[in-house]
Amino acid sequence: MVKQKEEMKQAAKQKQKMTPSEAIVETLIKEDVKEVYGIVGSAFMDMLDLFPTAGIRFVPVRHEQTAGHMADAQERVSGKAGVIVGQNGPGISNMVTSVAAANQAHSPMVVISPSAGNPAKGLDGFQEADQVSMFKDITVETVQVTHTSRVAERLRTAFRIAYAERGPVLFDIPRDMFYGEMEDYILEPHQYRVDRKGTGDPTYLERAVDLLKNAKKPVIVSGRGTVDAGGIDTVVKLAEYLSAPAACAYMHNDAFPADHPLAVGPIGYMGSKAAMYSMEEADVVLAIGTRLSQFGTLPCYDIDYFPKSADIIQIDINPRQIGRTHPVEVGIIGDAKAASDEIYRQLQTELPSPKKDEDRMKAVSKRKEDWEQELVDLAMEDGNPINPRRALLEMTKALPENAIVSSDIGNVSSTANAYLKFTQPRRHIAALTYGNTGFAYPAALGAQRAEPDAPVFAIVGDGAWGMSLHEVSTAVEQNIPVVACVFNNQSWAAEKKNQVDFFDDRYIGSNIQGPDFADVAKSMGALAHTITKPEDIVPAIEEALKQRKPAVLNIYVDGTQLAPPFRKDALNMPTRILDKYKHLDYSEWGN
Image (cartoon, helix red, strand yellow):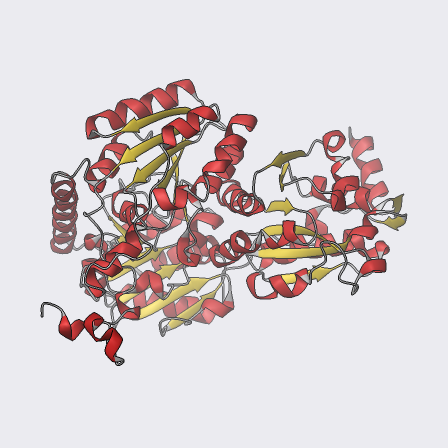
């Protein structure tokens, strides 16, 4: 065994003769890529032909946007960069939305982007497009292959940047460069990239410890960076040592265990009032692994909770995010776990015994109890046929502890932010601040591929479902047993709420009709139910989990019971100047 390892080590130091396709596939093997998502195309067929022998599974989807969402979610669950590929031109341009979403989610991803062949470039040939320009603003980098000899080196660069800068990278290769002959090394990832960064500047760490040591009402906000770094256990220790309530960043409800006494839930739109009231009174905020996004810290429930005078300590791996949305007292560029470990170590020295604030803890506990009761009370109000909050409450009753839940964008999906609770990391896969509909179901498919034995659910409105229901065919074909919970109020409900509040109940484009989604799903080979009574939700979920088949639950919910508008800050009451539109002016309402 020792001799074999030594031979392999020596071989790795020597260039090998191979084709560019072989160089790509061998690099993917070294990066432990098990699956690539996309739709078959002639541009990359030479590479594709090698996948089965290499042990890489190609997962064909029905639309390339799905490939990006699957790879995004696969990375969020597994921690390994997702890889997608498509035909040059339309196949790659179909990925724009999902790659942009992954970029805002900070998900490492490599987009293998075959482009028009060099002999045909600039001739407006079949399926020619400037793919690099398309992706420049929605990736952390675009890497181009300029010569066959550099194929492996350029792909290594793509993976290095994707992991280092936490986002998607376009690997653009002219389709004729898959062919030919080249010589290069096939390197191990540790030879060209580093997975973890350090603790941060010692001076700033000391300043952070000093602020926390003297804080009267510290609050912790834990985000995706904590999850990615495996730092939740340390954040729990910090919260306990400081007697600090711990909130989750917007739509990262798995960033702190919900069953911990100090957990107060998520901040942000339709989050937890307990978290927001705790934030409002904070004198020091320790934000770990979160960019404190602008949308994710807006007032909610008419609570302008983000403290204006508190000292903010922000830990982020990306220096671009420090102080970007809120002024910070201390900015620490470092790995969320490594920096938290060091702060905890120093705190134990500076504060020989943990802080105790029994009165504050009682107040936090009371807020949590009140909020939980409010959520139940709101859910138990009658709906026609089902109050959407009641449907969410019933759904959460049936979720196993290790369930992974993806959530889309939209009225019901966002209301789920208040109801979803997790005790384990890498369980919550949300659409986040890119806010594109049609995310949740493809993401759930990717999450299921990353963790085949876990129960996986998607929370989807009927509008978003219209953008993703075709992928039920993918789930059936690939035997991916995701349970899609479609909350059907026959409307684009988030936009409908804007028309209720700002446009005098004038519904233009927001009321929609669709087929019986259960019948459609059954025709594709999935398990499916139409649900009009809340007590039928738990049994339907239990059946789906027992059968371990792709399932679609078409849950009809009340289209008049709507959450507040997403963007009160971005809407104004309508004013009209031309006479023909005067009757639409808000000043005329009721006249």
